Every structure is written in structure tokens, then in C-alpha cells.
Length: 216
Ligand code: E4P
Image (cartoon, rainbow, N blue to C red; front, side, top):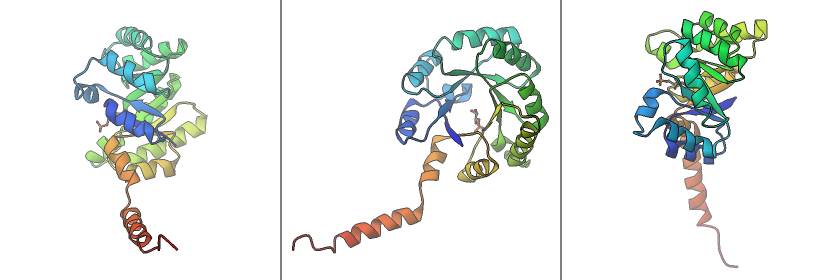
């Protein structure tokens, strides 16, 4: 499973990339707003040290506007992927952009039928938001299961990005289901690394090391 980091914070991205586990980045206007930086400059900096896909979201609500924003954003770097909301106009835009070989990530997907339509437009990625479904007592991971099955039935090439991840169990379930990608916030990446038995084990090894005679 590929792991993307779900943040626009350059420090977090650099730190996660240095771990050797990051395949790409997803941003959105909410994440970017926290950084207090110009969007294009921010994306340029991220793409200067990361060659994997970096998702940048459009804000237009009509296909024409989305396509024109996408064409501008792709000028920033060749690994920019255009994030487009899963609405009627979004589907139209994705169809046009896939004809121009501009990569797309269709975001705010909350149903398997939305994901089916998204794949038919030739989108490169679909982002089902599982945490936000869990938040309203609908099992987010069930959506991933359904999309996986539908895409397998028809051999769709659209990759599933499990998004809106809130905790390590979401990552575990995504991997068990064979999702293509999980986009994970930095705090959850840290939780994935940490295990109390690892820390206790290190402490014991260090204490025992002190008991080893240093000189013959
Ligand atoms: C995905 O690409 C989105 O940026 C993200 O996962 C949204 O998650 P949230 O529900 O935590 O805002």
C-alpha cells in the first residue's frame, strides 16, 4: 500500500519523507489555510523535494473553471495531481483532463456509486473520506470494501486513496482490504511507528548493556 501524507505543512512532509515511507502528498484548502502561505509557492516547495504525486485542489464549481485552474496548477510541477470534488461539474472536468493526460484525484467521495461514476470518467484516483463517515455513524471502511469490489468487477484502473484517516486502525483496515493508497495525517504516522513494548525493550537493552564488562 502506498502511503501519502495528508498535510500542507512542509516541516511535517520533510520529516515523514526522511523516514523513507512516503509516496505522495494530499493537500486541501483547509490544510493549506493553516500554513499562512501562498498556495503556489507552497506547492512548488513540496514538489522540489518530493517526486511522488502531490494533490492540489481546485476551488471552482464549474467544469470550465476547474479545467482552467488545473492547467495552471500543473505548470507548477509535473507531479501535481488535480483534486476535484465529486459533483456533476467535477466529473465533466475529470473527463476533459484525462483526455489531456492531466492527473486527477476525485475528492469528497462518500458512496460507492459516486466512485463508480468517477472511475468511468478516467480519474487516476478517488478519495473516499472514511473518517467523516465514521463521524456520522456510517462505517467508512465498508465503503472501501464496496469500491474495491466494484473496481475489481470491471477492472477499473482508478486507484483508491483511503482519506480522512483518524487513527492507526484505519490504516490497518485499509491495508487489509488492499487499498491502493492511504493518506495519513502526520500525527497518525507517529502513532503507527510507536509501540510501548519497543520503548520498554530499548530501555532494557540499554540498562543491560551497562552490565557488560567493557575491559578484559
Ligand atoms: C484527503 O485528501 C483530505 O485531505 C483529507 O483526508 C480530509 O480529511 P478530514 O476529514 O480529516 O478533513
